Image (cartoon, rainbow, N blue to C red; front, side):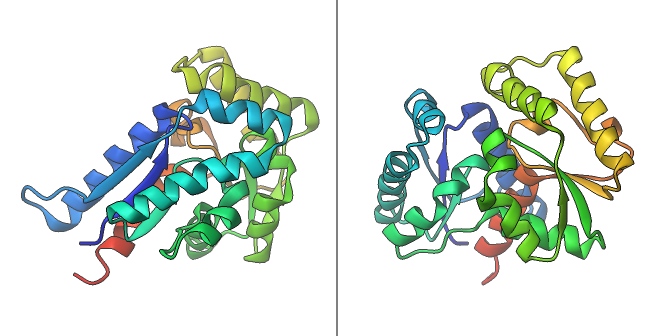
Length: 231
């Protein structure tokens, strides 16, 4: 089994999901007392979020690159960024290390296409929804991507940072997310990509009329498949 390096803490609420999902997948595949070989560098999100807000992605990328280098030195064989938004700085991290980075968009696009879907709705932070690093990568892999309107994008972003990242799960916000997903389905979405690692804390399959693709779970399972490929 290879060692998985996690760059987490953005937020710790969803990093916890990564740890659980990866270990559950290893246990499912290997049985017995098996658990995953993991290294975790958990950053202080209070240091990262202001850089996101200011658009200082170079500084944010430098912080995560140092974390990645530390994980590589400690023995990680592969890296995961435990946040969709911070894949904005994936190129900087890839340039800083010699081990592979498993990209959440690539893992998600593969699973969506395998399921036979070509048009998806996307929920995430406003950075994920509005900046090309995420949508364009999905499009390059053959997916047509539908986004919520501007007001709904602002609402989704606010709920992520002000509620989900702080462990607050409100029924009113769940209802808002359900409404947005229903609108995307009305526009032709065959499935919904939950493109933020915190969103699965709030919504689940029963909240939408089409399949939901939980990028946290997809990413975690892709990491386990990679780590066990030589077994």
